Length: 495
Image (cartoon, rainbow, N blue to C red; front, side, top):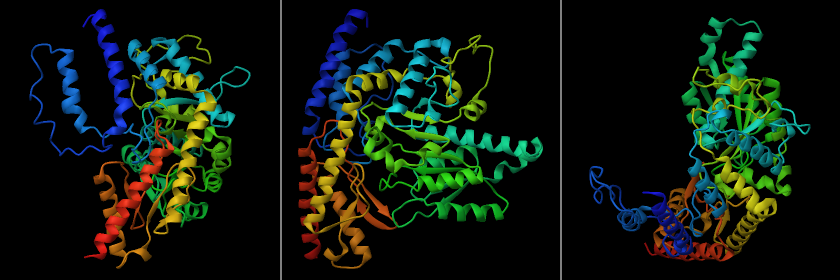
């Protein structure tokens, strides 16, 4: 493909993308293919000779498209949103054009410096404390800063590595020798609630520490008291607490942990406090949500995903640390083929030392496009629209009388179930009916959502957050929920 054909095919692909977005709501949001469908449609070896763009495009439409669950459909209410936007796509196109491998400043100075600038922009936009900024107000380098990770799972791993190194340094400062430190590494304990994302457990498995899962309270929150009790038991058993994750907007219910109380305990017990705000962190662009996040200013690290609810195409996970010393110290490996800039200034950061991989894409471009082309006001309007629609859906479900809300509706997530009093039978029958309702809604094909279990109780959890969604889509969701509920209850009563 030469540059002239690229011009032609590139324009055709943009038209294809635009057509897809104009028509995606007409298709069922969930794919219905069976496992292995694609293998039977594809050759079992790569082509020996070049194939045409037309042939590839035809296969996308006839073979790939049927197997796609349409996350960008306005009728997709599953998991949490995976926002896309045309400005972010344009930024990704520019990133693909440069196609750098930006492991240090000299690889492409603009890539490093734009990330530093944009992460400070974003940190200020969500109201982060100045401790997390890379550049101070006087233009000099701060102790902290932000870095774009691929996912919140990666962020968990790197901050737990940093936390481990911080604790080891403290043990050495207190007189423990290197050999003794090596002998007690297996005694390090990280703390999560039973509502913490699975990324925490995976990160602990990778770094090889112990894990304590703490039962959340009646509102599915990790509390100061529960954390203190767990730490006390572990210290009595000779273990070494070193890390705690608090969540601002859990996956199951969007609950907010006791951030201030957990910060108190982390400070007194010398724990690294990480705040996982992967989903709900985007809401902090709106000042009215910031009082809910009181305590994040005391954290060691904070993470949220603009690729969830802030109009930035996957992948883009924003991580800030208040002090990068332990992060960089733990992840820095020097080689002669990785030159450092002599007399480096404040803007010369080797972001390879802030992440697991060596290479990194120019992800700051798409975030820069989004923040400039929407502006703070546009991003706030995007968030507030979804919160308003979630509140409306909550009110409609309550008014119906057959449903109960299982958790406070604070952001765009509504967790509910059919009331036990509406269903004839025991707890098993109630769960079975609600699980069947999830299947019935998704099999209907007009909308897609997922269910969950809250301490053994089946519930439904539609998440409102499509970048293109309207109140009409939320109204359709309600209509389908009501119709399918009527059908399921009717069928059960006839059995």
